[in-house]
Image (tube, rainbow, N blue to C red):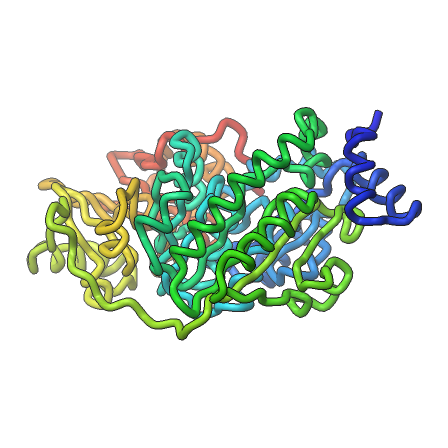
Length: 474
C-alpha cells in the first residue's frame, strides 16, 4: 500500500504538472526506505580524517553534492550498524542527519559566511545548529531557539556532544522575536514547523492527517513566523526559510507573502549553491527538492536579503540583574595552573567571556549580554570548571568543546576500557601509580571525558544522561 494517498498525489500533480513518468518516480521512491546519511563535525575532526576512519571500518560512503562534510552510507543492512552507538558518534565526530536537511545551513553560509550573530528559530533537535556552529566557527554566536521545553534537553545534549560552545538556548515562541529583538541578527534560519510531506520515507504515517484545510492552518503559522524573522533581521542581513514539505501553500506562498508585504527584502536565488542545483531550482530561484531527484527526503529552501548594509553590533554590558560576576585574579590564576600541563586553552584571551556563578566558571558566547537584555535565556555557553577547596573539577562540556587543546598523552584508553567508560563504569587502573589530579581520557586521539584517579580506580565523570548500554568500540 502506498504511503501517498490518491488525494495527495492529485494535489501534487495539479501543482507541479509532472508528466506520468515523473509521477511514477515520485510515488515509487516515496515508498522506499530512506538511505542513511551523516555529516562530519568539523569542530572536532577533518572530513578527510573521519572518512578514512569509517572506511577502514568497512563503511561505504557517497558524497552528498551540496555538503562537503556530508555522506550517504550506501552499504546493505545499514540499520544493523547502530550509528548512534558508534564511539565516533558518541565522541561528537559526526551527526546523523538527513541529507536534504543539510541544505539550509549550507545556504546561509553560502550567502553570509562572516555572520557573527545568528538565530536558528526552530532549532531542536540540533542538526542545523551544530552544522552552523561548525561552518561559522567559534567566533560566532548562535541563538538556538526551541518552543518545546522537552525538546530543549535533546537540543542541549546534541550541542554538548558536538562541542558547540558558541550557542545560546532560548525557549520562546518564534513569533515573538520580531517584537523582542528587532533588527537584531546578521542571519536567521527559519526551518519552519510544517506538514512533513517530504518525510514519508522515514515516517510512513507522515500524511495521516494531511488535508487542504491543514495546509492552510500551518501556512498561516509559517507566515507569522517569517514576519517575525523579517523584523528580527538586521538591515543587510540574510534570511533562510526552509521546510521538509512539498506543497506550494507552505513554501512558495509563504515566500510570496514575505516579498509582497515588505518592500525592502529581496529574493536571493540558490541555483548556484551546488553544481547540480539546477535539477531542483524553481524559476524564482528557490530549491524545491522532490525525493526522486536525489534519492533523499523532500525539502524546500529559499533565501532573502534585507536592504541595507550589515553592521556589527556595539559591545553591551551585562543586564542589571545578571547573576554572574567576574572571577577575581586569583581564580583566573588558579584556572591557568589547573590547565598548565593539561590544556593549551588560553585563559587570558578568553577572559572577557569567562564569568562565575557560585562555584562554577562559565564561558559565554560574545552575544550573550545582548540576548539577555532582550529575552530570557535557558542556557548559554558552557561550564568550564567547578571550584572546590580540595581541587577544582573540569567540566565535561569544556572537554567536549575544546578537546583539541588537551594533552593526549598518558590517558589513552583501549577498546575495552572505552566501552566501560561509556557504560558509566569506574575504570580499574594498571599497577603503576596514577596521578592524583583529574585527567582527560582519550580514545584514538579524541576526548571521551574526565576521569579522577582514586586509589586503584579512575572515577568516571561522564554525565549520567550520556551513559550508553551498548557502545560500539573498535
